[in-house]
Length: 166
Image (tube, rainbow, N blue to C red; front, side):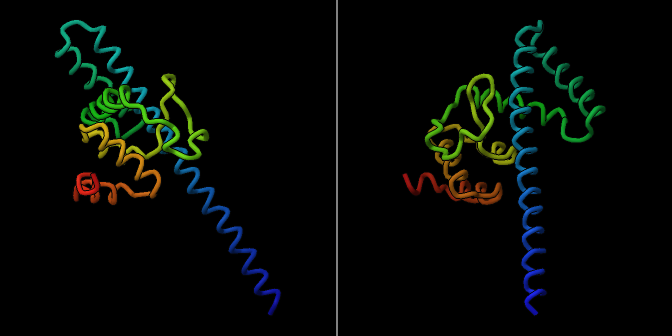
């Protein structure tokens, strides 16, 4: 009887080890995507600013880049998604939150500009719609601290939590 309980505990520990590894891998992939999307947005802005006939050239950049990335990597690089990456860079290149608001932030990657990202791409898709800087910071910090899912963040933002607490 004792051996069976010991075996169950052992098997449970090994299963938990791989669950944790899978969760950490998923988080690492998601963070790599966020940093890549930010950098892609920066590169698109840089390319647009060097092009002539901006509007026409800008449209061409998105269409051609979308075609090439989709051909190389598959889904996820539509014209609209590339525009979101560009917007992500525009919004967050001017938006820094002190790392003191994020415990353990030293474990996160830093981009060339010294910016760290703390949440998933799905979270940032919601956050970059918020024009009020203090409100955006509130939701970003609270999402990180409380581990809110994308859906929970969307629900709380939709219920005007910031305004009710302010």
